[in-house]
Image 1 (spheres, rainbow, N blue to C red):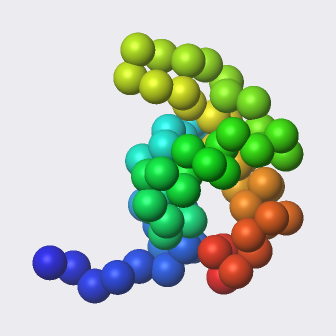
Image 2 (image 1 turned 90 degrees about the vertical axis):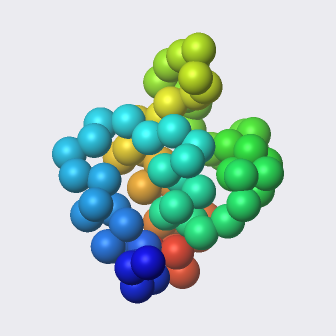
Length: 76
């Protein structure tokens, strides 16, 4: 098992991904799947870019901007 990663290391591992789903948001913010669901339902959270059969996806840059404003401690 590897060592825990900081939020910025998690982002680097996403690479050039243009979109993120709930699993990626969960890893970045370090919360449960249920908490991600609560966060993404907030009026302030970005609208999903698409709804796929596997779930919603968001534009990575929009999610990161939201985290910087609403959960800055999660992005060192």
